[in-house]
Length: 303
Ligand SMILES: Cc1cc2nc3c(=O)[nH]c(=O)nc-3n(C[C@H](O)[C@H](O)[C@H](O)COP(=O)(O)OP(=O)(O)OC[C@H]3O[C@@H](n4cnc5c(N)ncnc54)[C@H](O)[C@@H]3O)c2cc1C
Image (cartoon, rainbow, N blue to C red; front, side, top):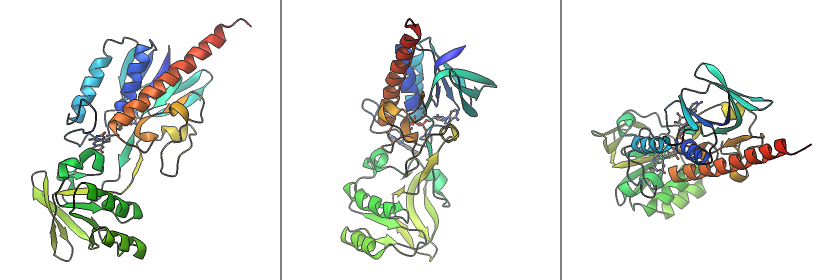
């Protein structure tokens, strides 16, 4: 059988697309291998009506809501490969090649978490990457921004909205460009260039940063700015183009340059929030349904 749409990725973007396609009575298969980007986070913030809900609970609620839509099915596996076919695409998952008329990749990204002794127990609790997700919980508290690029410097300056006490730790990187150093100084962001030995605290509460020179710095929150990668190689293997920032280039309604292939969520745009990913999934689903309707009409038209 051929699915109207195969959705690879069952995070907020993929599930939102599945809901919209299910409600349009489309046969959709969601393939997901169960490693959402925010799985280390204790609470998801900034999603209207679900502020503070644990990410796993949010996904459980979303999957439950799909239950009445019988045309939507689930495959718990990694999609290992995808190829174009005469009728659309085929995807290798669950030990078989599965056929779809359209393909939506909602496969997300993975973060380059800094390699620092002790970070594992704090990550997602008091060490974060996104101020919109977790900045409010650290308001008016001593914050370190971690990174050595211009983006990290700008990030540190932007963090001043959440706290007056923000420093930039470059972890051994000797110095910022003079203009940037001056901007940080003017913005009230001290720079700590020393190499970091480890992070210390109690339980999952960060308390201090320990530097190689033996000095310590009391901090209760650390935000890193170190980059990210596509979670899946499927978009590249299908010939998608990428933006300079490494996102899949999409146009209107998440369509890619490859006909019938859509990419939604973190994989495609840079406003990386759950509510945005869900909105992009819905947009893509509407475009997919419209595309299928138009193809069906053309096929049914008398020659
Ligand atoms: C620690 C942390 C905390 C965060 N906190 C917040 C917050 O508070 N608020 C907020 O709005 N945003 C938050 N975010 C960002 C948020 O997680 C993302 O914006 C959101 O998850 C993007 O949704 P998505 O559907 O695009 O991708 P994801 O949620 O990453 O879902 C992608 C899914 O695709 C699956 N997948 C990938 N490749 C394959 C494959 N080949 N085969 C099968 N399945 C595959 C993965 O298993 C995953 O389930 C946080 C991120 C992190 C890292």
